[in-house]
Amino acid sequence: MFTQYVETPLGLLLLCADGTALTEVILAEQRGPETPNDVTALAAAQLSEYFSKKRESFSVPLAPQGTPFRESVWAALALIPYGRVVTYGQLAAACGHPRAVRAAASAVGKNPLAVFLPCHRVVAARGLGGFAWGLAAKRTLLHLEGVEIPKNSPVSQNFLFTFP
Image 1 (cartoon, rainbow, N blue to C red):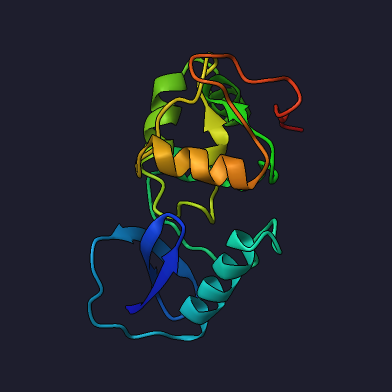
Image 2: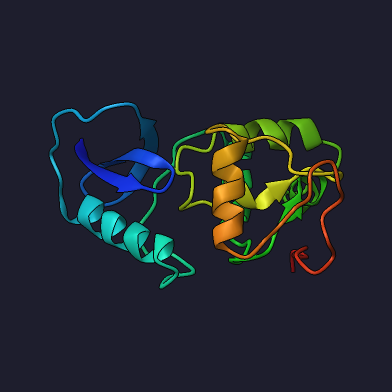
């Protein structure tokens, strides 16, 4: 396992990788030992560009591990473009399970690669919804991308993405 810490507007993130791909991003409380490799270095550089508004998508190889359903949800997350959002219901439907909204929301909450697989771009039908790292972090990421969602308000159609 390879690891590298990076300071971001969200706080300290720990990037974890196997030999070829990023496997997890953790919101860390403090630094520990690091064992960086090319993958973690690339991820750190791309995060810096993202937070500087110089990057809208990532090309770091990703290898999240989960159930087939979770992996299908995470694959759908990768399709949501910068500055756009989908509802949990849209996400469930895009995965072929339109009635599995709660299961899709749970899979979003278990996303091991936050930011890289943009779970912050999934919102509730009537507002922001949740986020594993807290709503302040979700608002920060959406604001960075130009998406504003007023408290307890539906998402503006201007920001909604429709899966192909």
